[in-house]
Image: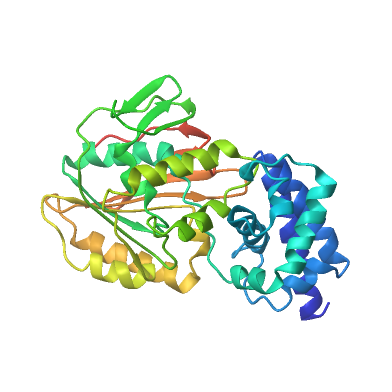
Length: 356
């Protein structure tokens, strides 16, 4: 098999696999679109022409969701009215055959714009992931009894940095501010969440290679475009979270994680727990950058003390079915599996944490 044939086979597989994943995660529209895209690509049709020469990795850079996100953006912007009339996210009513024809019309009519969007980073700042992260933050707060200095990489719009400002319904448990404008809920499995102890945030900061400015309507629409059009509840939750966080002063720098962490971890902050956290972004980080981040963390960990501790909380995928929630803390460097969860936070299986 030639290099070109091997790459084409990989692209086709990425469309088929992502389509199955979307179907399993509740998006019948994207399951249908991506199966048709795979067939069209295999036949050398319009989809093959639009993605020709795209330089990224079909799976790691998620070409299928970049393509559909580009079309969804045009529908949300009012530039693809025929497609918008068939998508629930834009007030339409879905019908498979007309929707596929409308999608093809968008790809053909807006091919130059689609190609530009294919080069843009995917952003899905799914705030419901805070249901999974919350238990880790609570464990860190109890373990060290200090305010948290939040450091988020791959922060997107920074919605998850404001986790303590939301209210939670975690199965039968409630947590958070009664006056919160946004309530996050999920199916809770396993051990009850230990909500004891004071949770205080001293500061919050983050970085991203392509951050979303919530004050920019166009940037917010780009963020919305990566949410699947038949998952109206997710889109409504995103919009509510954006409105809630807009005036909170969240600061997201446009830079790579390695350079940013080299600065942020260069000196300890006394009487605060520095918490590096991230969710569903590690797969997009190049191998060399991962190694650098790991080295920076372990170097900072060796310098950590009880007066200036360090924690690493992450929610990252281990397969196509679920993520793991893991926590490592210094001094000590012990790593533990806190639980498992759905990629979008729809369910959390909590295992609980070890004692201090």
